[in-house]
Image 1 (tube, rainbow, N blue to C red):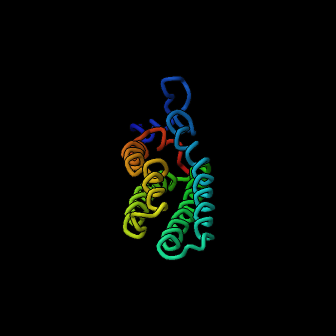
Image 2: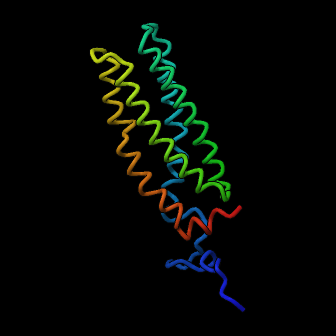
Image 3: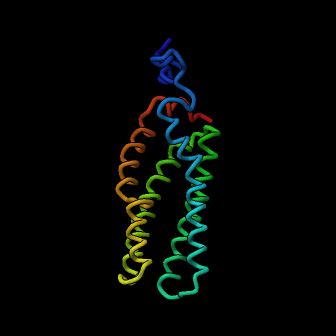
Length: 163
């Protein structure tokens, strides 16, 4: 008769329900994982539109890199969502990786845009607006700062992702 180190996984929460399950704060990343692949897919289509623009040169180069990065995010976000909703044990680690990848992707796209696109072009101005609205590095860093510790220490996460 010892103390079960996993007892917290079965203990009822404050509201009387079990800790296991995609409830509480886990609903926010769940919604994000449902919406994100579609947002990134839309951004891939925008990238294909840039590629179809036959202006060539730096815009084509940036559009190619942008499209490849966004396609990678579509695939990795979809795989992470699959494991998240299957409640697999690897999901918290994958979400941590996804958050870090999104920070890196935002930073890389912003820096490459500043370096590759000539400052006098409309694409350069659009990049700066896009960096503030869509690829906001600060928002990505804040999200990672909040969610990575949550997925590492939360008892609900430990109780939910057990498969």
